[in-house]
Length: 120
Image 1 (cartoon, rainbow, N blue to C red):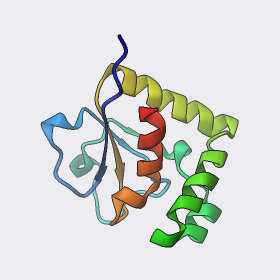
Image 2 (cartoon, one colour; image 1 turned 90 degrees about the horizontal axis):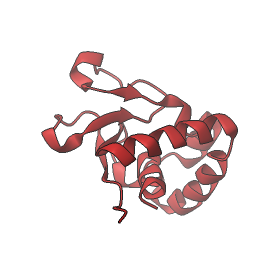
Image 3 (tube, rainbow, N blue to C red; image 1 turned 60 degrees about the vertical axis):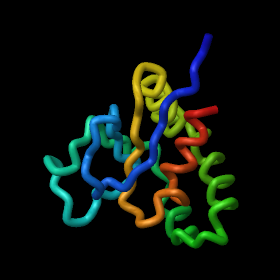
């Protein structure tokens, strides 16, 4: 019997919770005004983050999220990013993983796209 990986998406600025499991930052750029101690990360997996070009094009415009997701999934086929994604899959197989992002709308971020991929 296989169980669906427990994957959560949260803002890195939110207080850590015991139910977070492994806390992994998936942004390419370190969050403004946040110390590494306060972030309580197990890992910073910046290799899995979208390219600067894609991130700039997207601009967290909700109308572009679907297309952003399609383009980002294509970027994740790049060997270096694919390896980073597989690493996240391995973590998710063993325990709850919380994907963290600094964006204000975590539900339309790269973390949300990654969470969908890890759950499938």
